[in-house]
Image 1 (cartoon, one colour):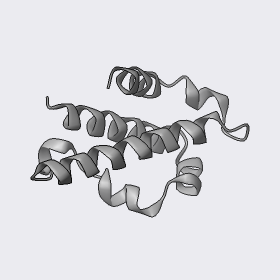
Image 2: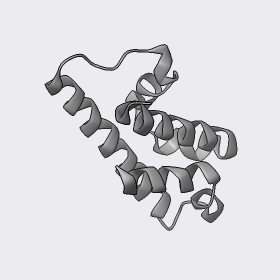
Image 3: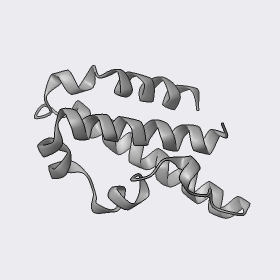
Length: 97
């Protein structure tokens, strides 16, 4: 799996898990563009063509992931969400990439 696919797919999986575990919370905090950006698996779409477009995509996914971490760290976020396996995996992938 390409690095861009890995980070995008890991974030998508975490968002899907949150949608099952805490749908009301996710609806309140998720930016509208996340629904379009992460609604399908990475192999069902195509990565952007060209170096600049790929760098922008990587930056966008990275910013989205860090924003999600900020949301999860908020005092108003249910603590069990921070310990979901998909969130733990997302943290590991973000640290590696």
